[in-house]
Structures are given as structure tokens and as C-alpha cells.
Length: 248
Image (tube, rainbow, N blue to C red; front, side, top):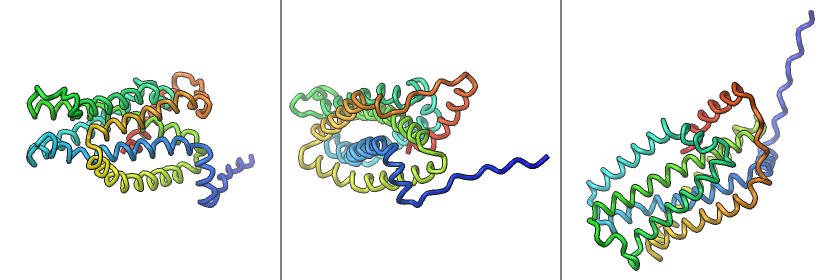
């Protein structure tokens, strides 16, 4: 019997055409992540200054606290991210709808905690204020990581297989650029308007993204496929691998 004809690989488009194609399919998802990465980077860059200048932490205390944070985020990335994302619905449509309000409220709570006008923490000791403030931040970041993972998994699922590498390269290049600019912007805003304004501004940005998601996600996202049990389990396993690759 004649051997079956080998399947032809799809022709790879030039880089410029691939980039245009990717942006036409998932450009709005990439733009969302760029905005979230930028404002989150602003806050993260300014956090050390807030801890030192406003909460009066010593260098040793700051080192301990940052080690705790890094350990917590490593635990979330390694063990909790996949289960949390699946618990929240797995797909971006559900995960983002649940995570965005949590992250938004987390930044608003931090803005209220750092407000000198309200003075809600005046009766607490410095170390209690610190752990309350940082605890809210860590919870917000955990949900932000899950949300970013779901968005990245969704975008890689929309893009044709032969363009997935180009998508990841494009995303990493754009996000690296935003991370270069965001620390300077965060420190400028902190010095110009104070930490309460900076956290409030970040909460407002997440609120606008949430409003955009409510209004347009159903139109822009593809319909969720109906899959049987085994296929669904395989998809979830693949999504978990993508999560661990893309959440940084």
C-alpha cells in the first residue's frame, strides 16, 4: 500500500505579518496586560520606599519582609496558581471577572490604609501596620498572577500553533519595556502625590479595566468550546503548564 502523504507544515509568515496577525487576534488582551503590568510595576517599585520612609522599617526588617514575599510568590507560582485558576473557572472569561474586583479593592484598601487624612492605622504599632499593609498587597498580587495567567493561556489558545512562539516573544518584549519604564513612573508619582494617591490611582485603572471587560469581553472572546471529560482534563493539564511558564 502506498505510504500516506506527509502533512505539509503551514507556511510561516514574515515577522511583520505575524505581528500584525497576532495584534488583530489578541492585541486587546496584550494591551490589557501591558496596562496592568505597568501600574503594578509602579506600585511594586515604590513599595520599598513606602516601607522605609512611611513605615520606618530598618534594612534588616525590609530584607526579612521581602524574603517572606518572594517565598510566598514562589509558593503561589509553584503550587497554588494552577489550582486557584481552575477553581476560579479556568478560562479568562470567568477568572478575570472574579479576580479584577479583588485586585482593584486591594489597591483601594491600601490607599485607605496609607491615607494620612483618614488615619485609620494611627492606633496600631508600626509593625502591625506593616504586616497589614503587606498582607493586603500579597493577596492582591496572588489574584493578579492568576488573572495574568488566564489571559495569557487564553491568548495562546486563540493564536494559530505556528505563531505561539512569536506571540510569547512579542509579549515578553512589550512587558520588558513596560517594566523598564514603570519604576521611574511609580517613584515620580509617589514623590509628587504620595502613596495613598498612587494606590488609589492604580485601583482606578483596574476599575476601568474591569468596566472594559464587562462591556466588551463577551464580544471579543471566542465562545467556550464544549468538551468531554477526558479532553477537558487534558486541556486543563496543558493550561497548568502554560500558567507556570507565563505568570512571571
